[in-house]
Image 1 (cartoon, one colour):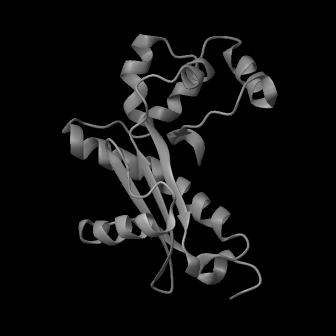
Image 2 (spheres, rainbow, N blue to C red):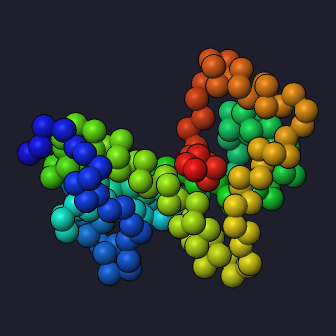
Length: 172
């Protein structure tokens, strides 16, 4: 086991293919206290080094209402209804025994978030059979009301509890 994980060690994070879902779910049942229970539209990522699975990340549909999230973002019920499909909720994150060494969890989560927007858009367009809009979730920030960004910065600096939802705009 290396003393410290380095990104040059060949970490690959990718979506799970259909034939791997059973293995992914079995590993979650074995190594995560919540088990396999991903709900709604789902996206599964695996982290691999030299062909060995070292981490599992599962995303799913967000809650229809979450007052802390909606307040944080500044969504009205109408806007929430239109935008919610662009939100992915991180439902599972598990580093497997083969990957338990310093810094690997951060590397896995960072790599997963860097590809989340494109992968989640693929999930949404497959299940809804609608034309998806690339980068649309990122535009939410630019359409904020005047002063809204200032309030969000204040909240991020301790004004409210951290938001438990992963947003597509999180990793660029």
